[in-house]
Length: 115
Length: 113
Image 1 (tube, each protein chain N blue to C red):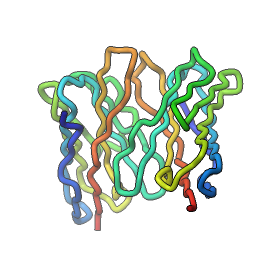
Image 2: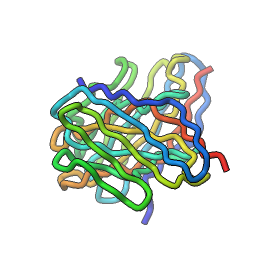
Image 3: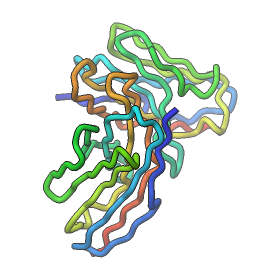
Image 4: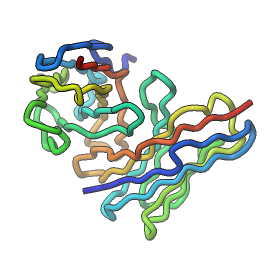
């Protein structure tokens, strides 16, 4: 079946512009996560959705970052007034939450470059 | 909050040798410990995981051990092959909590033919 998909795969933007990153989770997965991976670093948790609600937003680095999820499916991560330090690969993952087996399946990521 | 430390950051072995990667965690409530493999330019993929009610788990050439008292867990790869070359990430989470994964910074493993 189809895995997690993300778009765009690459995004180059100018400092100060807003960007939207999209994630399509695996069908039927109720849990969705956003992570950020900077060059040579591990994956940094940003936000977790269960259905359409976000019980854990603790990883969002500033109020310039926001995310929403509609219909319990697609999620959008928005970064306003982008800064150069926002450059990273943004990874989305989904899992079949509510079971005892919570493997998170990752998407291919969106590589964001802020000039 | 949870903090995961991973060592070494780079590891180079000869084909056929074993490789060991170690992680420590800080939150004693963590009870789920997955390992992900990320090949260059690709997405992370789960290779093995362990829950806190077991001390060891094996899957062919890979194994993971967990010491809850010391709060550390390790990945062991035996009979390494060039295709094992990748970045490996350990992680910890609290199953039944937010289930977010807290990752280590990764280990770049190179298997030399």
